Length: 136
Image 1 (cartoon, rainbow, N blue to C red):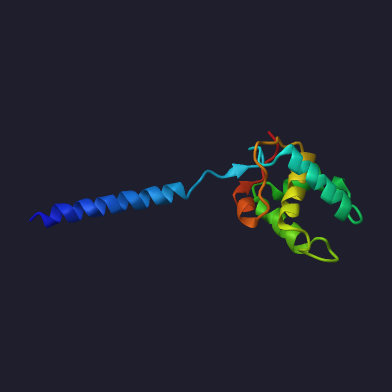
Image 2 (cartoon, rainbow, N blue to C red):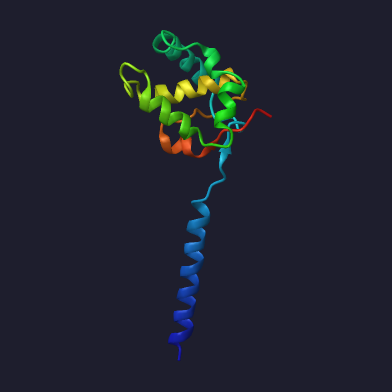
């Protein structure tokens, strides 16, 4: 008879533990208005852009509605995928992962998004957790 309460209690603990795990794994999604990059990182991104991108691109292409509107409501990973998968055109994917992150930070800076205390990590997983929103 004492087995049932122990079994029930064990099951309840397991359910609570599983619930806690799934809640912890669901961190709130950040947006581009959450201060997801630093000023120093944007400055590094500017230097990368000037050294590796200006031969083909002008900053105007990454500024204003023409840049923000197509990505509105989408994760920064979409921008990341294009940048890291197709650029530079003569050697796609040849920049260091963090350089692509720095470039995206620079694009956010060009569009007036607020800086924060932490750098934007240079990886697809981090970009997937940040949604592009128009500047508030």
